Length: 152
Image 1 (cartoon, rainbow, N blue to C red):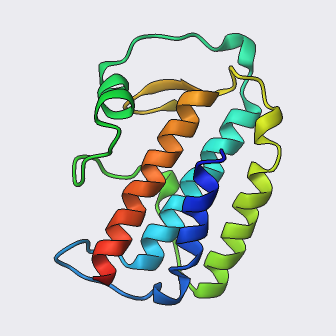
Image 2 (image 1 turned 30 degrees about the vertical axis):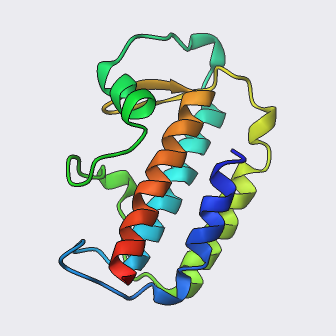
């Protein structure tokens, strides 16, 4: 997760702009983008920690291969965030800061986890630890780029 930490730091630097919106880029605010990214990292890392590495089975998935290995970029506007990772309620600078701190705590022991911990992604199937790291990096960068476009 070494590659994800600087991206999370970059998100932290955008906290003061949490209320900004630019409808030509996204109907969601900067705060929504940050909260969604944080919530995604938190839920996925938690799911991996709860998984049973002995039950992981690799299976080829064309979508996963194309996005994570070939494009190495998540296209905009092609998928809708599952309800479980959509922010709910009021988003404040303080709530975002607290959630970022929680994610950092959740990532502390990531390196010690078995390489076959995994979570199920609706488009990519089961993602083991290394693929999860790639996905979280690409996903968080995807939303960081949206934030940067909102702030232009």
